[in-house]
Amino acid sequence: MTRHGTLFARAAILAAGTLVALALSAAPAGAATTLHFFQKPESQRFLDPSGNPITNPNAPPAVGDLFIFTNRDYVGNKKHHAKHWTATDHLQCTVTTVSSTGAAGLCNGQVAIGGSMLLAENVKLDLSDSGTTTVPITGGTGKFVHMKGTARSVSIGKTNDSEFTIELH
Image: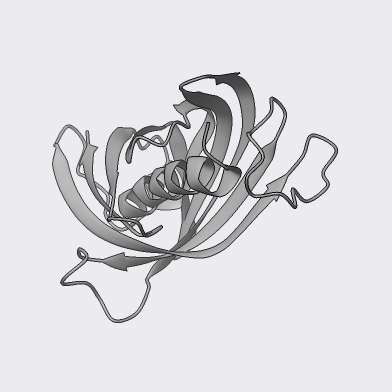
């Protein structure tokens, strides 16, 4: 099992990045839209089930551990993206299962853009360090009310940055 930072950082940042991409554009009703984005991490915290910071980054994750991430999101991809971020996102996951091949968690995420938000509420995610994460979008507020879709994020090398493709419907 890899340490907390490696195991969760990529999965959580990738998952959160997919949420941001959805916030930048709304698809017309009934139409499918594909979007491409780039994301940079802003903050991350790892907590034990009691809410205390996890100080040993090499410790394997445990059921009940919590991780919290925030990110700044840029339109584009790794090589060609906007100079300034246009959205921010937050993802919080609680580890629900741990096995020899990885972990799974129950997650909640929000993306803020303009006066609206996209939501991923109580979604189950594979937190294994596979480099790819798919997140279901469960709804939103403002111009994103009833938004649905899926997003696929792929990590960029050994960084916490990600590129992702979003399919809205």
